[in-house]
Image (cartoon, rainbow, N blue to C red):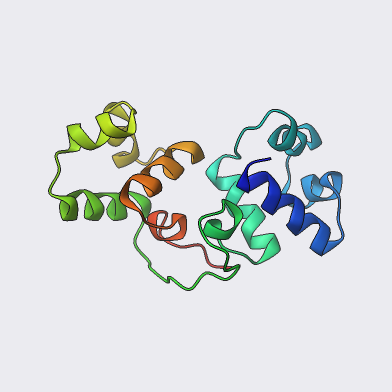
Length: 142
């Protein structure tokens, strides 16, 4: 199991609910929750946010970036603004960063126009810049 799967399983057990119950609570199909465990894929960002809001934990905790369940990094910037700050602070070119992360530069412009990034990409960006997910997505009020 990966960190996300282990943490989600732990949260389910602590809350004494099963996957079917969680699927109903957050409004997704039961097969979607099972897919996180059986097909080893990550939830879309909006679903991940619903999960952390329900369990009152941070994205960093859910995805194994932190062992602290609570989010202590309160930052009201949005993902794109935070990403730009990280890029500017790094003194690296946008092209180099995206090449290093192995994602298309065209994603940057889609995000600028309001398209939400995939969770796996957010994870890779957070690892690259050595920041938490909660910081990168602008924090989640829980």
